Picture 1: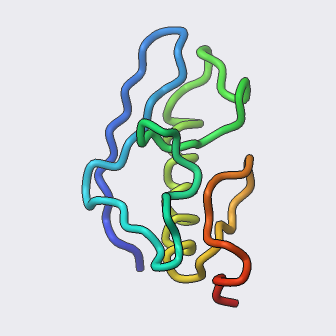
Picture 2: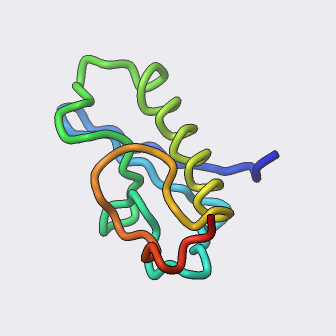
Picture 3: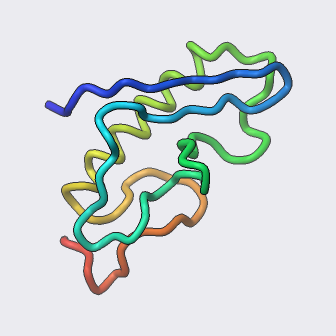
Length: 99
């Protein structure tokens, strides 16, 4: 029921995997000024610091976490608030949220 996305995963040993959506361009909710749960460089914020370790398999962690991020992104576009967990990120103000 959602759009198809193309993502790019760049992994360098002993660094966190970097995940970006390449197509389609990520849109903003009408009340938002920034995408939620992304780093300043546009990489998706998929986990808390230290949650991912370099011995973990990308297929068991990063891929399903990316899929979950995209699910929450689609819901955010419709609802106006982030339904996932994690640290605070820019989202529309509570007064502008659609309930």
